[in-house]
Length: 362
Ligand code: TXA
Ligand code: MG
Image 1 (tube, helix red, strand yellow):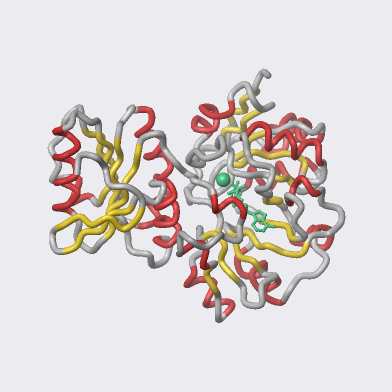
Image 2: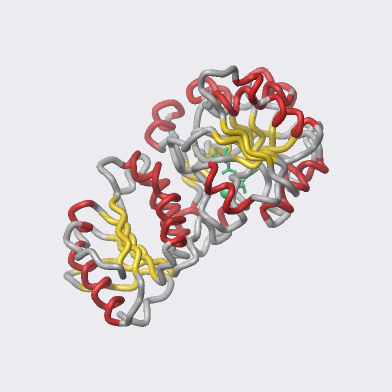
């Protein structure tokens, strides 16, 4: 399939520039578009055949439901049968924005979209291109992140192109997504609203609006099955084997890790705080990415760094963990998954295996 590209011009009307993309969506084709979190792979959310094309393009397991994207809160009346008070409060406080809510589904929504569940995931993105595209398409757009299943989500049109060129009808280039990690998912059908995936809207922000909020135990304990079907898969993963180093001050341990890996002739990717990165000698064998100075900056760049490690063909990646406050909860969730739960902890100057496997060179 020939994939069209739309490079948008800030000085021209979005309605005109997006007309062709919207027409393709109306005809049941798949078009990638930017949102403030990550790029989405969009198709008509009320058309089961169009939804099937999304699953095929991503190589996504059929038991993993899609998120419906809307441009207007009024659409909720068509898509859900019964909104709880917590759902209404969340819509009021955080839409448009990086929050997806799980609500009871209306009969209008095809079973392919919800993977047979009685609930549906809905989000109103805060991005002008997404908004106009949904409006022109004339209905909700079903969209997962626009990566091949299992890979890091794309935060640029270039990253979408790497995974989807020749596979989908078109890609809209709207610049880099500025949040960089996917939306927070909150199940509003549970007795207490429950976070199924941490993201751009933090636990602290949700607590301020809702009072009590639970976190799905499946997110915290490896032996519990997560409630969001997609969270059970290895995800956000680069090709190289990745290790996450958690603990308060792990700079010595990261340097030790790098020395050992180098001695084995490995090419190493390092993602760590600026002061740690500056301790490591620059060499062709090491690709360094520094966190940046805020959590928001790390979230924004995280997937791009993981994809760049792949492009540089590194053999092994070591990442330094961050505090789980605020956006840190989402960042750590994605880093643990990217590392396939290979987690090492620094204790009294030693590296101790927390979960997963220890690299052969340690
Ligand atoms: O930021 C985002 O949410 C991006 C952009 C494109 O909007 N989308 C995104 O979609 O991350 P996706 O498909 O990659 O992740 C959707 C997650 C999956 O883990 C899926 O299992 C879960 O939402 N999900 C969807 N419907 C659900 C439902 N009814 N109940 C529980 N989990 C659900
Ligand atoms: Mg995804």
